[in-house]
Length: 252
Image (tube, rainbow, N blue to C red; front, side, top):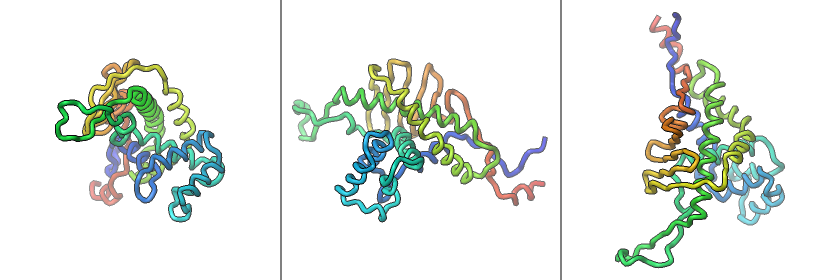
């Protein structure tokens, strides 16, 4: 058997995940949910190009200073879809924002002697947040698994990143359709853990969603649906052209 001596098998998931995460637009070097909500509303047809232009004007944003803002100008086009899809996918790949469903408590408890602000959970906003997170995670599973399956063999890591970016861009409309398809109102959730380094909940349709220092994991019926290098319970490896041809020459 002829083995290519500069090629190593590497799990596909971390390469796909990090590539999509890096594809999410940043503004001035950081994420900005407000800007991306407007862009995604434009992509979904909830805002017109004129309304997006007015948003830039009202916020005194010069599109020439940051190429990410050029996505807000003009009619809907593929790069806008790709940017919105990458942003949505990234929302479950970073630490959760508890501000989505926490609100200042109306009354301080007797145990709170140091005067710190207390917070309570807004149940309606919590259900909306968890419904969205589960839908996004499931769409990530579907599209990432498809990409892992169709990637070519023996590319360099950087070439794989380029191909993943291209494929995810092509699949962006499908990805957003999957998010909508998985968004099921009426699910029940059990919030098990909520702290800085761990966020865990279960859903009434059988999923266990967990985000901790290792990133996102999603389990269904005891199977790793996402995480630990697996997608839908299967490991996907890429045969990566990892070393320079010089290595193959040395090992002849």
